[in-house]
Image: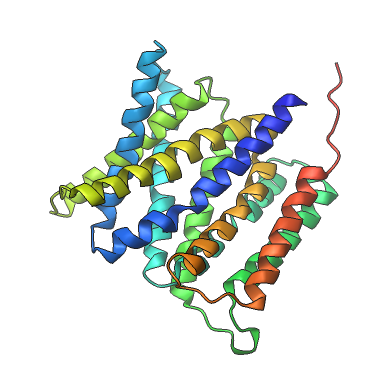
Length: 295
């Protein structure tokens, strides 16, 4: 029971910290700093901090060839999902892009149901539908005059799909490496992806000024280090679907940042209703009866 409680707490921390992405990404984009460079610094700063911790604990970095391959895949998936989300930021407001991205719980649940033949409990199904309706209200300012950039929406949805696959691999691949070690290799290979992208597109890696460096480190530590470690822990403790559903609290944080800090959204009844529905959906999944394990 204690592990389940810790798993849910980890999922909540992961959701809140990942939802804080606009807090860092909006000012970074406002200063016209390269998105690829920003994402490189985000992931490399995280991987450096994690490897320092692993060395301090004298934990071996050795992995099997199979695990090495899976960790490369995880790093690429994490990088590409981030890239899709920030491409969507150019076409949609941060709040709308984030809410569409955070539809990934539906993708996780559908893949588990169709391809892994996992039975999805009725409360989880109800929670998924309530969350989906909540995301819809968060995304639409005026139902009577529905308007959205469909290219931006598709790009954000591609990010959601990529992130869902990341979560499923962590859950289903039986990697023996610790969660912290998975986080290290995921962020390391993500940073290499963006570094190679800069190189092959003929661009140089800009050296950030002090204020920008602070933003980039905060971007890495809060939205990546804390988020990814607690995410891996939560998935292992409570599974992909509950973690994914709790993760839909992320757009609540993202929209709140857009409204009250950057004033890029208006607080409307639709936004209020969407937030309430998402919270209700999350609580239904958290409070549903758990299956007892038999000896």
